[in-house]
Length: 311
Ligand SMILES: Nc1ncnc2c1ncn2[C@@H]1O[C@H](COP(=O)(O)OP(=O)(O)O)[C@@H](O)[C@H]1O
Ligand SMILES: [Mg+2]
Image (cartoon, rainbow, N blue to C red; front, top):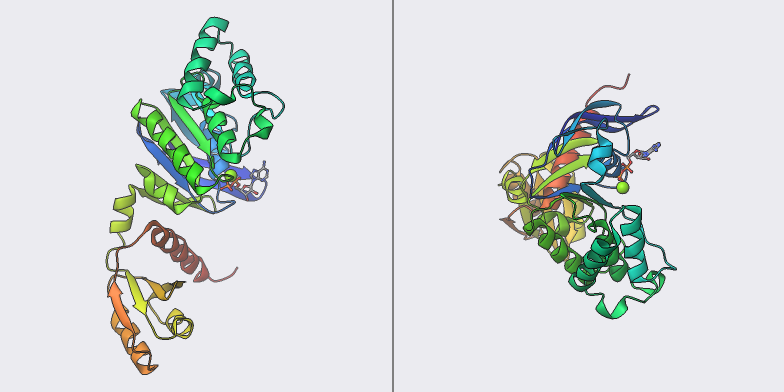
């Protein structure tokens, strides 16, 4: 899947702003970004549901949106909302999905039997979907999304309404699909889910601010993340947040996590400031995580736009 200069405007709002993307076959590709950053809009354009204002899209060798009709049979799409009928049973939901996709009856029965087993619904086939837990519903929605054995699966915040354990189970299923050769594009605002992806793209206000493998993205921040153990963390946080070269200071338990604008720069200044404040603090370099990547990518932009004089 490849997109070049992908842009979507809604009136004056630029929801997706010249995004370049390349998703290799067989990968679990993550889309990370806060609410309103353009994840859903991008996904809708990639699967041919929404016409871009600008840009080129190539998915499974098809030009989108022109050839969206041919694409439809080869992809699955699952959204953050439950796309199930509450008053149909588990099996009836799957039968309905097979019917609207014109899967012949015998083939559908076989496929549904297999899915019921793979997704652990053997004892719940007759249960009404509306009476199941959030995690079970999401598992059923996933079974429904793969009924046609799609080559490519779009998942738009699929786990935003389920508990942590169900999220883990759900991701196991996603990796099973990836192992079987399916390409997955998953949007999320959970950092732990982003860590699991083979590659990811970070969106902020419609702009792609970073992309790469999780390890590659965090390695690029080497020397920029510090842990500070201070006697009075709140006071130390206020002190450090104002220092030049400090992008952000977050309190995590009793530790402060400091993100520097440049590797190494500012570390000595931080020590001095803490000493001057009588904090007797311990400052150590720590490995960056994806949250640091996210803050770095977005704060950097805020600073850049703040320095542009108002018209
Ligand atoms: N159909 C629409 N009409 C007008 N604005 C929209 C429409 N769809 C999305 N937007 C706006 O585009 C921006 C990106 O939205 P969206 O892609 O849903 O973000 P995300 O999925 O990352 O939360 C938001 O500001 C949203 O309000
Ligand atoms: Mg969304």
